[in-house]
Length: 177
Image 1 (spheres, rainbow, N blue to C red):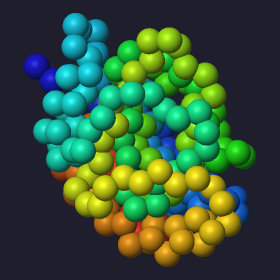
Image 2 (image 1 turned 135 degrees about the vertical axis):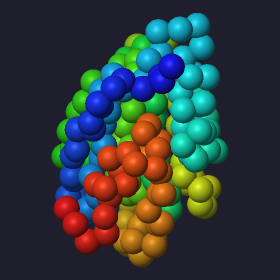
Image 3 (image 1 turned 120 degrees about the vertical axis):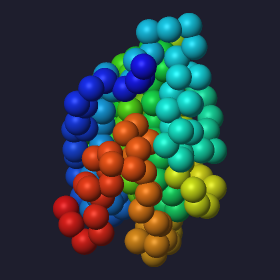
């Protein structure tokens, strides 16, 4: 039995470079209620899904309460427990409520910050094959460096939720918005 909801399609959001947070012309993808996590081990469920679709270097925790981004790698965040309000896209971005079973897939450079989290909030983070994740804070110097590294980040071969034929593969194309 699949742990992914049938016919799930992601919401998409594109954020402009705000001068400090570069964001990315590729869209942020948010799958609402995509993963069945109503079990005793929701973290393991998400880890198995991400790992089975080629996304690794996983961790369990929350989302930092300060604006940051990753300039050398894309990131998937799968909500295992609790709920949170996360602002994606930097200071002038969009706040979204994320709840168990939701998955957000952030293209390199996408700003994010936890604005509120329930005490039991837990996400599983994962990355496609490539360089290790680095936390980058929004400064003019970091922005200038990120503008050089972000275009070099390879596109993932798979969607962490739906694999080789998932929406990420068709939605993340270089040179398109």
